[in-house]
Length: 138
Image (cartoon, rainbow, N blue to C red; front, side, top):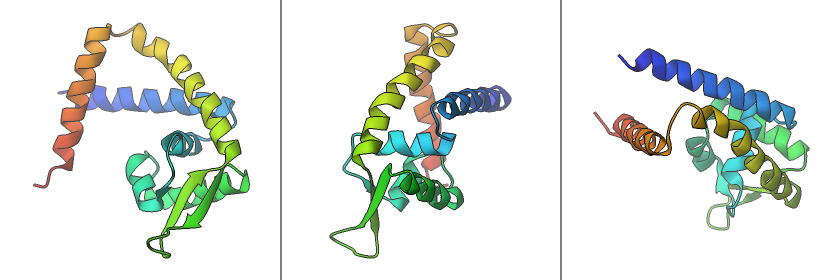
């Protein structure tokens, strides 16, 4: 069965990713939100919770802390004033430009020593198939 190795690999990845994010002054959740918002015009909280690994219950606190740090700002949506669009501030964009490549460089050796380029592409395709299977209605 692949369930246990998949869970162990995921947990190992998250632990290492979060550990490195903390060295850059961010929690794992804050890092996830910053990189998800990077290179976008922003998104609503619902979309942000769907695209990050941050749970809905945790997202509000993460956003509050990032706003206090001056890294994000929330504005009412022009089409629906009940919806807030969250985007990076200029300072948040600068942080994104620094931490995202740094995190990629840090995590790459873990993948490169375990898998060939072809294996990584195969794994990517398989993980997307698995993800999509969970998204299908039963």
